Length: 285
Ligand code: PPS
Image 1 (cartoon, protein in one colour):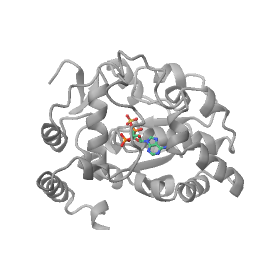
Image 2: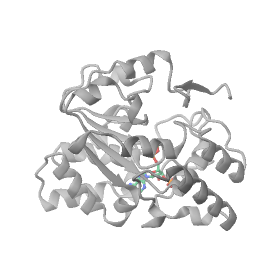
Image 3: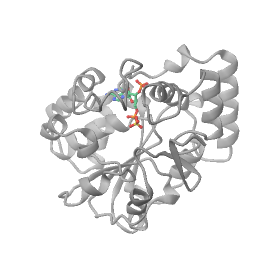
Image 4: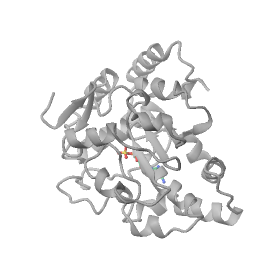
């Protein structure tokens, strides 16, 4: 593999953001009962949830989401700066992870944490990731779209195969500690999903507050929020002349990228790998 990645339990992680110490910190992390985890396979709606959850837990106060960059506000647990950000963070902490369930630290299971697992149509995940690889200097060049499809299906991308991640988290035996949310549902009815999330997080918020949070968390609003649009990251790491982090923010952009043959093959591989699991694929709904 390219020198830009390290391998952790067979999963690729960027060396720019991960190292042996950060992964050790992840493994030994002590969860608190009131921690809230946002779990995603990359490019599924992480940044969106990093905006929504703090806005709900603050009762609709948007101070944190307009003054703290998202990587500080909702740290990425396995990333190099997590220890620094989480050290003396008061409860409730909100934490992101891209790890599969079976690698989560023991205290994740033994504590009463809540987890929100966000999924997205893997075809759109792939498209979003393809553009991200073009702009992020700490990732490999994605090659052609066709080559990137191969890499994605082989799991030669960040955090491995999409299918493995899905299966791992759908099997997570943590009862009502986990809520599953889809990117597509948020596109369709953001306020409705935000309402369900607020109930899951035991927040009794008025309709006006939910409305205001949904407005603040819209794509156009987040695209201009410097605390969330990654414009604070130097160009040498994320070259915005090549793409934007908040790029299109729609469901179904895969239709503008996959040929019918590429899409048929992609679906066939995903379906075969998901066979026997309880996961309902978005195209079979
Ligand atoms: S990462 O790198 O894993 O943290 O990326 P992640 O945040 O999971 O995914 C980035 C994609 O999410 C889109 N996004 C949104 N879509 C709709 N509405 C809102 N508010 C929103 N915020 C982020 C973002 O635009 C990326 O998708 P694409 O398809 O590339 O636009």
